[in-house]
Length: 344
Length: 235
Image (tube, rainbow over all chains, first blue to last red; front, side, top):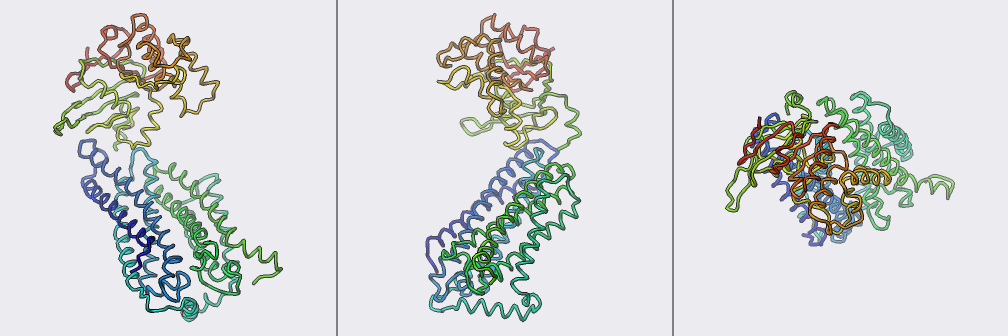
């Protein structure tokens, strides 16, 4: 077991999240049965008060889990490599953790994404004085629990799997994975870094224009178009991660090829990973928020104005996040080109 | 919420089956307001009278959105504001002017500063703030006291400052708690003229008082009597 203060901080954050979550879940389970928004009797007002409190607790859960994800990434990328022989970045730590390590990263991100999704619905509900989405928000918050539990369980399993007497080979894990990826999907793996980078830039232009249009749009487009563009935005984010892995990182590390995203979080590389993935997370949340607003506006017609405002704000966020991401990701490549007159 | 039913409510403030319970010292619930049903219409001033401890102030705080009922709802222009979340009620309260029985003036600040506090969230220009405060102060005979700290004023003057503070934003709903308790007859006449003018401009005016001068005043279109938590409309 690793008893670093940040590890303890992570457990403390998770413990706090559970305390708040269980309290909120208790309130929701007490308040949700017999929910009758058309009635104003004592029981219904009591239920409304309970769910209002649960909503406030949901915001605490969001803050705690977002911070816990940041701490989790920090400990994997910067702290735990010290305790794993042979590990130079988070890649080595994940190798030592085995499959629970990768699952833990995925589940934590999924849990935080799910809570942010709840937050998008909750803010729409907060904008509506009549609170027509209160019951839906409460149900969504209940769904977060299993994901939180699975994430915590896999983190624990991964941490137990780390053995200080078993060295790992950080770099060979990357190249082995790249080789396996090449065998599994030769077409995608056969693409050159240039293709990924050009694909990322083209996708960024579309996403950036879409974000700007949503922000400054003359009118709301049909839900189908909005959802299609949200899907495209998510596809661009995947492309951006792959372009970062296979292309842009070379200019950041200043070597020919080192497809490791975990090294981006190291102090040697100015911890750019936090900024880059933070911006991608911001863009992902804006896209999610926009998609949820459109879906809710279709389902609940009277929320059209509120959804319009939220889509507008999400568009602004998507535009800014994608713009800043591209500046930071592609900036080193452009600087390289200006300094040396060629690409790597 | 049943919006069709809400739309049938008259413009102004209304209570629908409002009940309020509070725990007493022993922890057992005590009924303060019991099944209050009333409509306070715009342009028609209402007076709520009743003995001390009947729950007049509590009812006024419920109407102002400062308290939430245990059951039932308070409607403003048909909207159930008592069931809204804090954020929406706070925003709605910008349309409410309230003069408390305890006044709650900011001690050490001048009359002008106390009067203009409610204008802050409205984002008025400075010239507009000065003009509005000046006009109202003239009507309430407070202009010579503009720069004087409120703790140096008499009880009646301080009460008029509190009323001016409630009225300065030209609220849609004006709620006054014992507004004439420290006023002489001349000032009661002055204030009632001002309230009549506000009501004529469409303000929903509710006054809680057991002042005999107000009970006999012709200003009020609706009169209620609050006794041990029950509200009755007087003929």
